[in-house]
Image (tube, rainbow, N blue to C red; front, top):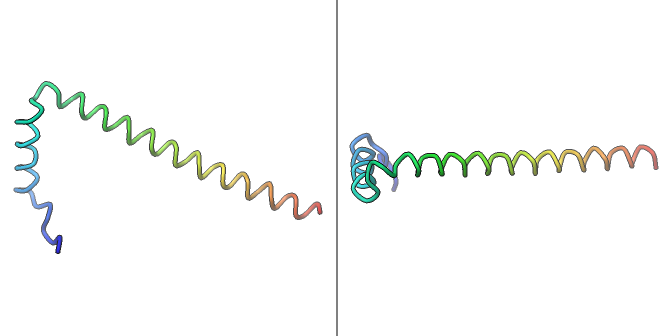
Length: 66
């Protein structure tokens, strides 16, 4: 169904449409905002993984003591 969806010509067309809608001046702002949101999402996911591994290690320590 989605075969060949992101061919180079399609990506070029999407870029042209984005340039028309937002203009070349706002593209750096949009890129920076997108980058910041991706970084914060990754940070939140890694923090959640760290909390899960910490809680599992605490549970394992409690089982060995008990």
